[in-house]
Length: 190
Image 1 (tube, helix red, strand yellow):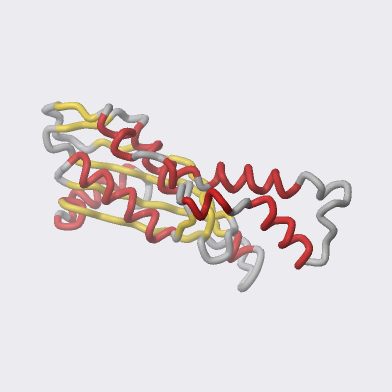
Image 2: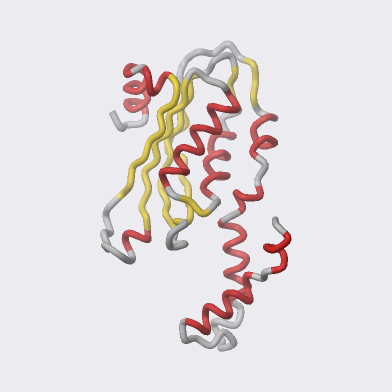
């Protein structure tokens, strides 16, 4: 955390926000809200404070496995960086090993680390794929994310049943249509 961030107290900013919205931050019901919001925002953005190197390096193993590894339906929650409203959904992640595998629980942890930041779904999808590509050096990585965005449902166009689907295909998943098709079939998108 930066020195500036340590000096700025979120709870006092929330009090000012409540006043700007026409509320009394000292009234019952709101008197504890600034501290609650501070605690909530720190929890929802904890990905900034996670060390991905440490998270991954303890669970990468040499293994001569060369078939696709898929972790399906990884639930995630994030905050849209444009409106600070939640978006949430499921991630489908696969990689084709090249002499190394990763502990399966680490894949959802990577999704979690990047989703617990102010995000765009497109960037989130790419960050997950890039991270696995860099650390595992597999033949390829594929990520598909489907999410419901409250910024689209609650405001603006107010489309309550619209989902956004993003993908990142790296290595063989980009260059080999058969690998891509197998992945999409395995995750029910093909």
